[in-house]
Length: 478
Figure 1 (tube, helix red, strand yellow):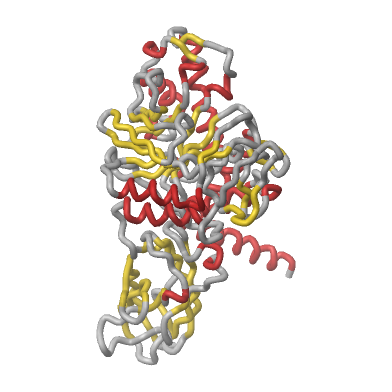
Figure 2: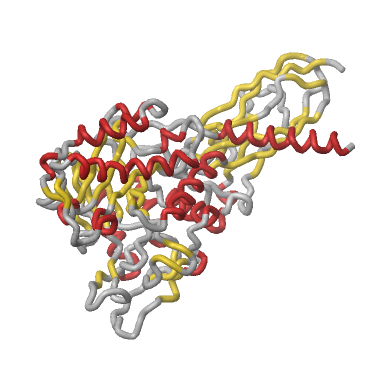
């Protein structure tokens, strides 16, 4: 009996792993002029360490920003709810366990069927090498030292993202690996001696045997200054300008930095204050995007906590201020923790050319054969790939589409979306990139034969949409 139980448990574990592997999906490179939304994303956070002096307290409490994998998964879901495409992940030689935990969270969510944002390293030279150290990039060893920072980043990512599609979730533009770097001139001289080809060759040597995308070269984004890296492909203002909207046109790429506000006066004296005004300024900045010619939107930031620029879900009724911080501001005009996430999502659905209603079928086990009158329990996993938010009150369901009036139905009706299971109350709906599991109970007809069936999502009574399953079920006599 014990051996049988062990065998059943092992079979269940193998079946679950096999199902998770099937929920993984490939992802494409972005095209150069494709609308892309990026944000800077910081990992220097733990329950009682890292950045602690931000004015805008997280919805779950700052003590619950643990830097552990489970918490990172909730943050990734928030970025998806905001409609963000690429996370510029801070690259510094400190608190690296938190970054690896974040990479692990990406892997776990992808195995659950989530189409998570792509990631790119955001190298911070000032934190990495300090403000007083200078290195000449005419010296080969200094070039190697620079590129090794990116190599460490990707080694960490691949150490916990080991599946066949892991490479696809590294951000690429025109199939080139996307790299971001901040103010190089603080720490490096002779930048004209440091061409992108050196970076490309060194990274290709390290990774291309297993990850072919590294043979295509690199696409470098840097901050918009006259002293920036001279071989960059794209420039945007990064931690350099305190404005709600700042546009840059470089190499015929029109990029815009959006900032919801800035408030570092718990940390710096006198510091700087850029008022949020309940989200009105950020909403107005997005309105400018939608009436301008823009290729790429960069949001500063997702979670730069101490400088108060984040757009994460925050407590709208509570502000942290030290005594010397005399300014006042408020998070949301409607006391909504998701104020900036929802504004970003609203802007994203207008900025990007993506259908409002669409799906991808990730996995199903609809049977190919049934006995007459047999009842079967099946599962279908569907990913929302459109910008509409699914919820039961919106009458989003899954079911069998009958293509003919007298076509045989294998189910009594449509299958409802479960709000609690899919965190609808928290996120206001099933957002783009999130998977949903529907558990079906189907019953074969009493007449033997081959029955071609069609299954897909529906809103209301007649609005079928998204990818469709076509499955022929052969019903046989017992």
